[in-house]
Amino acid sequence: MARFLVTAGPTREAIDPVRYLSNRSSGKMGYAICDALIASGHQVVLVSGPTSLTAPASVEFVAVESALEMLDACQQHWSRCDAMFAVAAVSDYRPASTHEQKMKRVEDSLSLELVANPDIVKLLAADKGQRLVIGFALESENGLQHARGKMVSKNLDFVCLNTPQAQGADVSELTLISDTAQWLLGPCSKPSLATKLVEAILENSNV
Ligand code: C5P
Image 1 (cartoon, rainbow, N blue to C red):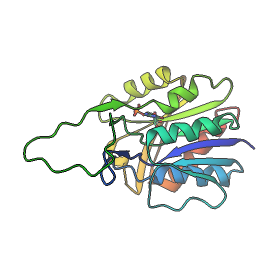
Image 2: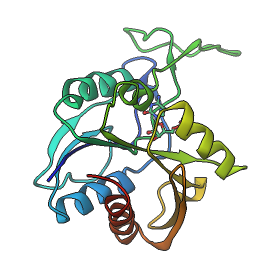
Image 3: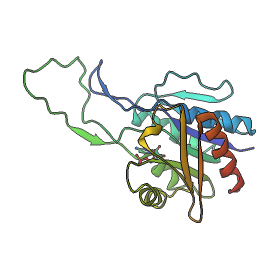
Image 4: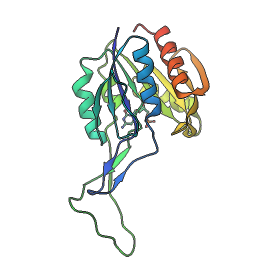
């Protein structure tokens, strides 16, 4: 039995107390992976951005909003985990500063300065040692090439390649990639896809 750290859902990057930057991630795939890991006898620490989903009863659940909060939570739990599934759609950017009061509307254009968020899975995978790290790549073109590039640059053991149509969808497919092989999984429901994905990874790793 291994303990998996799973990130899921979108992050929200506050502009002011009522506005934020985010994306269309529903969290469904990450939560389905948690269910599949638990069904195969593993423990899960789920660090999740805001979603409308209910966390599986037996996960250790950590709710976060922003990418910086997600990084902090992951860093707190990573040393006690044997593997990581980075499923979260982390916002690439956050506002350079968050306004304390609601920003007033301006008549013409408004520029917002953004700064890059840290790459959570890359930071954690940098000192993974023997631990297994699986990332996702959502690509709209040259998917295999970009996914393989991410596997190398982020020090990942597996990458799950999917397309923008997967966001929020109930039925999905993905290509699981390792440095020596690839597997096409689905199309099927996200719970079935998560089960196939977890089975394929467990069969092809030492976890
Ligand atoms: O956004 P990108 O395509 O680089 O994301 C690929 C992988 O990296 C995903 O597994 C995602 O969860 C992870 N990631 C992350 N922190 C970021 C950006 C992406 O953990 N800031």
